[in-house]
Image (cartoon, rainbow, N blue to C red):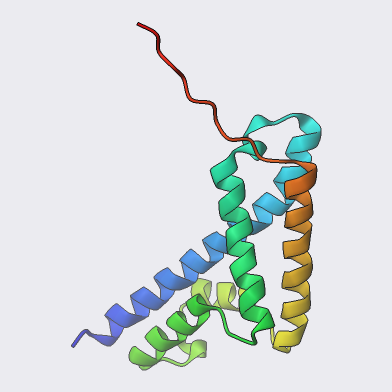
Length: 139
C-alpha cells in the first residue's frame, strides 16, 4: 500500500501531463496555419501532425460519447486514493485545475472539440503534411 503523498504526487504528475497535452494541441492549432504562411517546414512533419490530429480526434470522440477524458478520471482516482478533495491541491496544481476544468456541461465541450477536430482536418487538407524522404546511400 502506497502512502497518500505518493498518490498525491502521481495526481499532480497526471495533471501536468494533461496540461502538456493541452499546450501541445493549442500550439498546433496556432502554429500550423502560421507556419504554412511563414514557410516553416516543421509544420508539415507527418508524425507530429498525425499525433496532433489523433489526440484531438480522441478528445472529440470522448466528448461526443459523453465520456470524461481518461486523464481527468485517472487524476480524480489518484486524488481519491490520496484522500484529497480537489480543493486540497497545492497552489499551482489548483491553478492548473481551474485553468483546465471549466464547470460547463459536457455537450458544450463536445461541440467545441468536434469543431476543433474539424478545423484540424481542414488544416490537414490545406497544409498537408509530408512524409520524410529517406536518404539512399550509394556505394
